[in-house]
Image 1: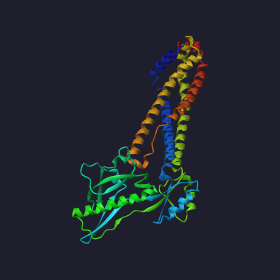
Image 2: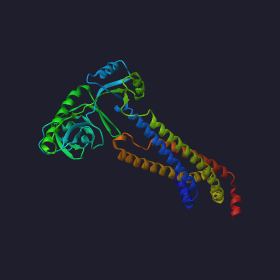
Image 3: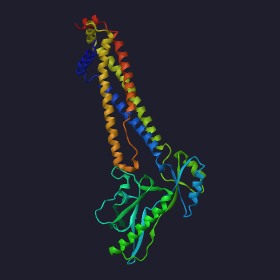
Amino acid sequence: MRAADYIKSAWGNLKGRKKTGKTMKYLLFTALLIYFIVNSLSSSAKSFTEQISKVPLARTLTVDDDENDSVYNRILADSREDDRLESVYHYITPLVVHAKETQAGKETVLELKVCTDAMKNYLYTGTMPEEGEILLPQYLYGTDEEGGTTSELVGKKITITVTDWNEKQTELEYLVCGTYDNIMAVTGNTTAYLVENEAVQAYEISMEGIRDLMLRQMKESGNYNRETYVGYEVQHIVGVQVKDYKDMDAIKEKYSDLYLSPVMLLEENGIEQIAGMVQFVGNLIAVFLLVIALINTMIVVLNDVSGRKKEMALYLTQGYTGRQVTGIILIEYALRMLWAFLMAAIIAFAILTIADSAVEKIFGIEYGILHLRFEPGLLPGALAIIIIIMLAVVYQTEKQIRKIVPARELKSEG
């Protein structure tokens, strides 16, 4: 008997018995869907923790430093002997430039947000450049539109929006005079730059240019009568970057007198543990459903073959062997299982793709390296589950066919 004959006979029988094995089919579909989703989520979480542990800020501890760089020099000297330390940086946070004004007894503070939203919303302008220059970080991190290198902006103008406490916005133009090397990562709404030590002085000089331009803009606007000027704030912090974020506790203990604190709070394996719990519970439910599906299959095959004794007897009298008849029954159930397998894989892929898009859209760059992906490596495991159930079908079918006596079954039907 050719394979095509098996499939043709099985397909014809299947179309006439659409309700047979329906419960088994949906139980298997649900179990495989849960299996695909929870294990894909676990795989995605593991990949996420592996990636996030490589992000500089996930491996960085910080501490305030004085202008004499005493803390920086101490840790830098230790880093040459401590294999756990990868780098020691001056961590500069010039997030806001302050210019305080007193007008009619009312104090107003003008804020220039240099390293946060303003950097993301830069615009090219076609007007002549204003006096004043700015040094940009070499790398901007964010979406495809926001991220990338700033090297192409050198010699060009950018526009930065300045907002005062009264929410009045002013656009200021700057000529980009150069870039500095930086390492940057994002956690929550906080953007921080790790600046190489030799770039600190150049960066502060560029901040002087911003301050002078702000004061001139304020004078020319006529909206502010300057009585006092506070200036801008640059906070000097030391960033201590460890090779493995698991060593962070040891480094904190070593410098307990400095009160080092993590820049990015990341509980060791916390995300993996949560994903592992979801995976365990999900797989437990999937196994429970698979056991029910297996029991249901055994019962359905028993009733199905018992109710089709005349049909089985006809096959046997026409020269079909018991194994050939079993093969026809097996293909009928294999087609049902194939439907459950394909639908579960397709729907799981669609759910994870939509969820990944939603995570990226809702949380943005905060979870920019968390990608929910369908794990193709789960497919062989799902096929193995189907093979086990098919073996049960073979066992039950052959067991029932051996009980059939063709002459007696055909005579009783006659």
